[in-house]
Length: 321
Image (tube, rainbow, N blue to C red; front, side, top):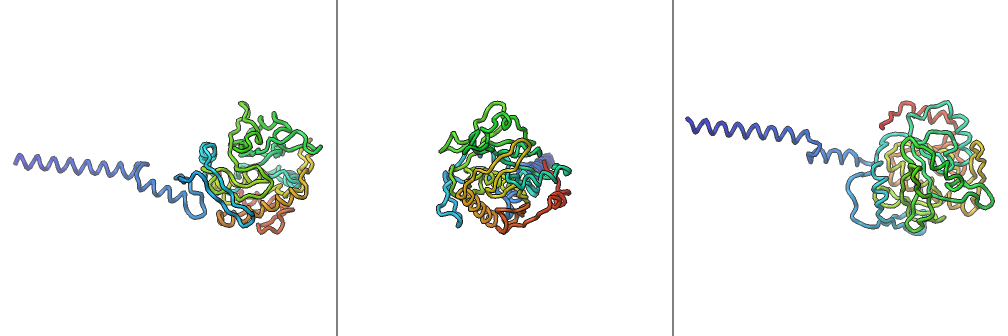
């Protein structure tokens, strides 16, 4: 009888322990099944896969729009500063603001709308537009004056660029092969570096995994901003002021002139064709809309001419951060 009691106690203890382990395992965030579920959820078709790292130190990217493939290298800078934004804005809509002339029309009609329910990103002199930006991208340090005309890059007014505050993050570009091309990170700027691949006016393929490798693209900062938004998981992008080299918007007292020559404009349009193919192949679930298209007219994306359409469509978009 005594031995039977001992055996019963031991069996009961084992059963209780197993039950406790089962309860801990099924509720713990470290449980393998839960990890697998989260990974699959993040990596569903059309999304960027944020987990795991390719062992290759370089990756070759090909585009039928460019003559040569692009070889991007692993980037510790992007792993530190870009990877945390992977799918951060999954399912949200975004406005990407270039500094082309049609930006002025957008500004005249958008002041009455709230920008709380949409991700906003801009490049260079868009800091003078008076629009709250979640992200600012400045890849070219530039010059104060270029070809006798006022420039739109960082050196035009370093203090203004460094002082500009984003709702989320400001990024300055860095190129390992051209380390002095981008703006310096000064203590008061609040900016973080992101790494591009090459400084060139020749069209280059774009890169999907910008969290582990260098950004692709060339010709304009707008393409680095576009790659970032796609990597951040947005489902819609409205291109505003992306006029493909037709000049700059007159923003308050910053009446910036166009300094792209015909060759530069041609390269810009070519890079947009690269972007069109890239999005079609890698982000087929993302909808791209061009507001008041000029250079991008007829490229294949949806075209609209009324600002109200943007804000009507995103009114009920839930902000996830």
